[in-house]
Amino acid sequence: MVKLGTLADVDLIITDQTPPKEIEAFAKENEVTIQVV
Image (cartoon, rainbow, N blue to C red; front, side):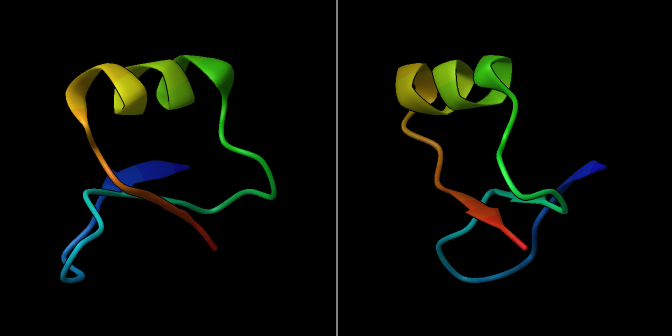
């Protein structure tokens, strides 16, 4: 489950142990901070 986050420096919150590679690639390209919970 991936959803937009509301925490300070976190744009995506991923409720999984490892974020999908597409998400990591997207995050790098767009300078998005992701948090795995």
